[in-house]
Image 1 (cartoon, rainbow, N blue to C red):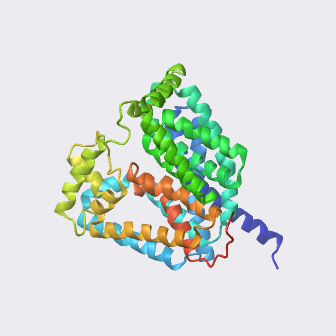
Image 2: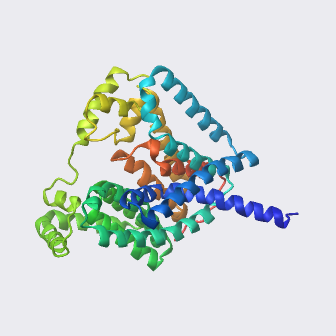
Image 3: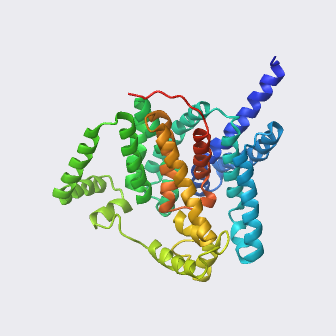
Length: 401
């Protein structure tokens, strides 16, 4: 029999675990607005959120220990991380200072994975909470765009803005297209368009890929392929007309967009300074392709190579993993892809579950091929937790029409 005390305690624990997950899911939003504001009541509010985040971190670990909610894969992950850190620091002590810069974010990422795998938080409840926060964060993103778009600081932080908005837009697009909710769809597409105008091209391209995937999962209709093909034909036949229209709208609204500029120059998918990073790090991989240079080796190499103006880390998950762990980095990449394959094979006929995973797969794993680092990507760890959760679950589902 569950007493009132037990019920209140379980409710408190659930709130703490959910809070820890939600804060990590939207961690890029938190860091962006922390950089954007300077003092005042908003800064004080953000400081309280950071303090609450730290409280949730330690409290959630305590709750997991109390319930002994550590499946085998969680124990393996913790053991693997400890071994990697000990070996890396013992053989490559020069990397320690770089890891210290990201150690807090990395620990929070591990915590997010452990919470998902503890099975103490129901996924459906997590979705509802994420949805509520998406409403508020999308409105905040739209307000920020229209009020700060012309400021120098906002233009300098366009990549951080993209990271902050992309997960919000992705989740809203999922809720809207999967459940046909108008408010989710409208907010999702508004933030998607804003990312096209004011964000980075990586976020725009990955969200476009997500929309195609969600539509395919929802309708499983070949007409979608024909429609996409027709749009591509129109773009190929009338590229200048389409781009002139886009430029006209952008100019009339006094918007400046790197994505539009690259479209007009025909340089949307061509290389930039990051290819210099890739070329340099690939050369370093040849020097130690078996074991790699240890965790954060890419940061060390870029620093001594004086390439930090182009980036402080690899900006590509495969290059980063191979640089740090050698051939074992390839195995880690294969492990992620293998779990994705198993999941899709099992749930491809269920648009609700598969669509939710696609959000995290595209916004985290696919996005990591263009920017960011796996060490500070909480949604990648949430993705892996969800994949292993669903792949190990005997889930009876019905095909959604």
